[in-house]
Length: 51
Image 1: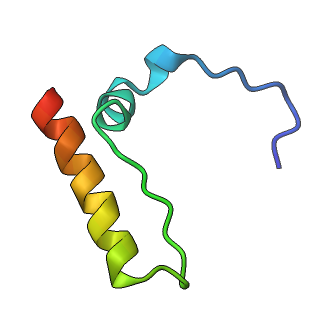
Image 2: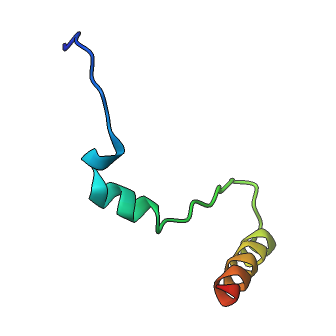
């Protein structure tokens, strides 16, 4: 086990940052209904159309 100090810099992982900048995170829940899924999809499509 390394006990030294590790410093991370955003420039260390440019490909990861590129992917994260194009990623959408949607919180899901076992209690969600099909209607919830439709509402989320509609919201995503609305934002997509606006962009």
